[in-house]
Amino acid sequence: MGQRTSLKNFFAIICAATLIFTGCGENNSATSAEVKEAIPVKNSVTIQINGKNFSATLEDNPTARAFAEMIPLEVDMTELNGNEKYFYLDKDLPADSVSVKQIHAGDLMLFGSNCVVIFYKDFTTNYSYTRLGKLDNPADLEKTLGKGNVRVAFSKN
Image (cartoon, rainbow, N blue to C red; front, side, top):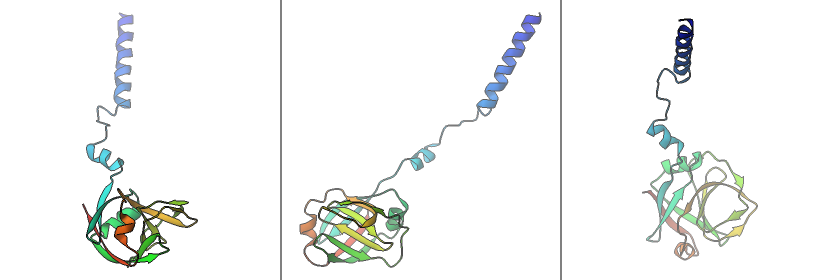
């Protein structure tokens, strides 16, 4: 009889410990909304230049999210250095600039806190930028942007 009581007590302790460690049966798995929030969402935008549409994917960072909130946006972009077009925003974005060292055609960057830049040539640089995104297929970007200033429209997909 004493052995049977000890066995019952042992099982009672095991059951109590299981309930304590599992939260009394509470579902500890993440909801689908929490999982979606944890997975970076790539925001797709369209950049229209001289009647041609380019698809771009925005980064998953506070700067790109703040920029996306400003879209739709139509701006005049100024030519600079034979490798980029830029424009200044009316307000500052949260910047987290880093030395990128290498620029690629199709890079969409923020210089400082309010200067948006589209690069159309590859080159090395010592400047620091915050990444906004990248054109998915920058083929013909240089030709489409042309040599001078250009009107560009950003829209959400």
